[in-house]
Length: 293
Image (cartoon, rainbow, N blue to C red):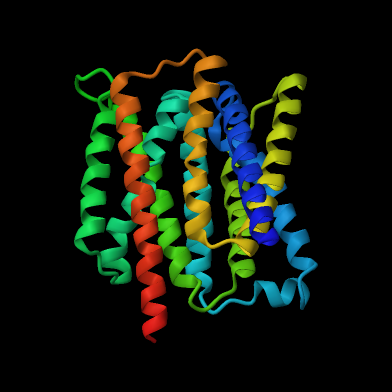
């Protein structure tokens, strides 16, 4: 019971720090190229994964050993690209509105898992998926009119992260979680280093401080999330991640002067409820299948 309590604390701290990171990323992404911001952030993240992997049993060599190298590389590139798109969304669309659209990602993962992973979805999850898609449509039409084309950027981010999660599920059948985490940081760091220098921009001294904070929050939030996953099931952690939408709304409205329409609020509530139900049903079905084996 005590370890579960610690797990929830770690998860809550991780999501809170992720949200602070998002708020700073919006500031930096509005002033500098998102690719450049992501590159510097990934340098710190990659260094963290290498140090962490070196302390594991067997060291770097054992951690880096993978049976699916191509899929691991694909995962790393997908997440790095998604982070670039996310930072761009914060700058172009806004923090609160972007997170409202991102909250639909679990629903998209459930949809894509059927053709790619061969998972079966019952009528309950289909109902939740359809309800979630209706919520997304409300979010995409914040004023009741036609949605802005820039919102497609956030939808693209959802697809990138959904494919990343599905690739992670595939590779987890043969590789350890630490191996996947190692490739996430290192491959992303290498990919961004190959592209990022073309977008190099000299930053003001004060913004370098903000960049340092982004790197620190990236490392600490990922570490706390790892600790949380050591103590809790993914189904227990996933609903907590929806707090990012609450945090993003508070930061966006109070600090950046963003506004939330009734459609966005209503759509977000529908999407979050649908997402939590979808995750819960996946957990129930997985436990049932495990008991039948």
